[in-house]
Structures are given as structure tokens and as C-alpha cells.
Length: 448
Image 1 (tube, rainbow, N blue to C red):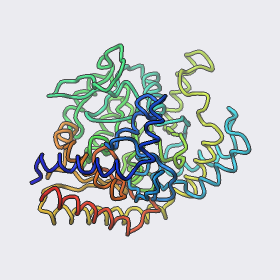
Image 2 (image 1 turned 120 degrees about the vertical axis):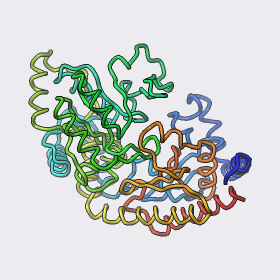
Image 3 (image 1 turned 120 degrees about the horizontal axis):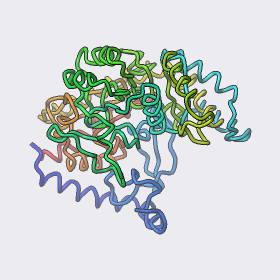
Image 4 (image 1 turned 30 degrees about the horizontal axis):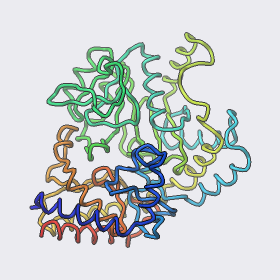
């Protein structure tokens, strides 16, 4: 019902509108291009599809202001980094307090004890370590799993994303593993050590694990980076049993699915993994991540360390577990990521999903809406995807580009990658209503 010509016309119109409305961002973009490669400090800042980067001025709660003075209802929230709101007061206070006491010591603080206790209580795993990002945590977990099992392969799912970890950049195309073209400068074929299968395919999982060479399965309990792919009933439990039976370690990366509820998808639905990774939001937006593991895994880690050179593992950086990150994480875990926060987020996310669905159906479109707790997505296709291949086939890049530009120009931010939304403890019903209204206006123009 939406023609290519209508999409192209909207993109052209909205680009012109953006240029006219954002002269300060335009000027800063030109200045930044003098020395920042591609004009931004990091390339993801170009993924919004705007003619030039939108320069932020400040953000608070679920609102963001740009340098031209425009206010936005922010349902992107730093692509999960600020999932619990921008600058939550307890985190901001903890950062300010710690900033005058030293930022990093290469020594633990009192905060470390509180953080470890909070992590163990919430996620039901007894032992933890801290890194600077989920990418680093996933890389460390893969290394440990290979080290303690003596196996070389990691199994991932087609369409997955686990940060900047070389091992996971493998896709299936027509059933054949191929290196992801976005993996820049790779000098060896990671397919030698990475197995990729489709999510929800139990037969493929059983066959892959039966070979006895897979150290770990690294997965999100629900895939969130290729659209949104939900586990079919019983699949996660079958995955857990298959890993246990074959001596393969199961790793949940809950950096995104922490949106499910207090304790993430694991505590809400299970099953318990051998290792658990949580990144971006755990310290309220301060670069930080954690990985947890069972007592059995901890014992095997120690055995592995005894066989190596003491003091070296090739895991972690000087700034891992720095004092500032621990202070922020303590405040976030104990005062921000609370049951009360989820009690606000989850019903409001249900409301957002329902209102988005009403808008879509009201315009006669056969699209579907899904969500994992406070994380939602509307897909421009009628049937939910069962795996990465199906999810990719449902993506409509130009249409999503048009939608995003229209929303940005009317003061609504959703994630620049597909149509993902986040509801935070600071998000209001009026912001949900506004997203629905602006989306309705957009679809009305596109349909004609």
C-alpha cells in the first residue's frame, strides 16, 4: 500500500525540512569534518539517516535537546545505554561524588562488594567480573569458554550481534556460512572456529553440538539486533538441555533483553545459563559491563589459570572495573534498575505496543508489533520472523529511513536501526501518545 515513489518523496521532503531546521548542527557538522573521520567521533553517529549529524546539547530522563533548541521525546535512549533514563539522579550523584575521589586505582572499592552482591542476588549466578563494554565481556567469555573446555568453536545464531567480537561476524546466506561484509580488515577466516545456525532450529542445534567441538553457545534469549526474533515455546529450555548433554557452555548476552524485567529474560523466564553478559545500561550509561558465571565455571577457570602464566590472561584492560564505573553501577543497580522501575516500564510498553498496533491497523497496513518487556518494535511485514534469514527479508530500509526522518523532524527519536523503541522509568503516557500520533501522521502521508 506504500509505493516506492511515496517513500522517495517523503525522504526528499524530510531531508529539506531537517536542513532548514538545524543550522547549528549543520555548522558543527562542517567544523567537525575538519578532523573527525567522516565528520563524527564514531561512525554510528551517522546511522540516523539525516543529511548531517544531529548534535545533542543535553538530555534528562526521557527527553533530549539538540543544539538548535529542539526538544525530543527520546525512545531510543542511546540505543539502550540510557535505557533507564538519561542521567538518573542517583547515578549522576554517584559520578559527581566519585569524580573528586579518584577515577581509577586498579584497586577495588567498597562499591565493588555491594555491586557483586546485587548482581548475584538479581541474576542468580555467584561469581562476576567487570569489563568496559559488552563487546569486551563477550570476547572474554569466549576466551574463557575455549580455555576451560579445550574446544575451539563458538556457536552463534544467524543475524546475531554481540558487539565488536570478530568471532560472531558470520551469517548464513542461502544456508551457507559467509563472513559478514562489515567485518573490516579480517585476516583469517573466522568460520574455521565459528558455527552459525538459525535461531529456533533445534535439529540444526543438536547436529552442531553433537560434534563435540563447540565450547559455548553465545546467544540473546530473544534476538534483538535483526529486527526482533522471539524464541518459540520450549526452544530455550531445549537449548539449555542440549548444551548440558554435550558439555557445551551456554552464554546469555542480556545487554538488550534486560528490558524483559527485573533480572532480565533469565530471571523472568529462564533457563539459567553457565555464563551471563550484561553491558550498556548496567552503569546508567557510563562505559561498563559485567559477566557472571556458575561456581563450576569458576572452578574450571582456576584450573585453566594454573596451567598458564600467572598474572596474564589476555582478558581485560587497565580501566576495567575502574572506581567511577563501580560507583555508577552501584547506584544504577540499587537505586535505578529497581522492581519499581520495571513496574512503570512494562505496562507502559504494553500500552505503546497496543497504540502502535492500533495506528497501523487503522491505516489498513498488515504489519506486526512485538516487544520484549520495555523494548518494542514494529515490523513492516505481517508475519513475525522465526530466524535471522526471515528477519532480514522483512526489512525495508528506505521505508524505515523515511519513517525515522519524519519522526525526528517532529521531535520523536526511536532507534536508528530498524524500528526499535524503549520505554524508561522516566517515559510518560503523553510521550507514548505523541509517538502514536506522529506515526499516524507519517503513515497517512505515505499511503496517500
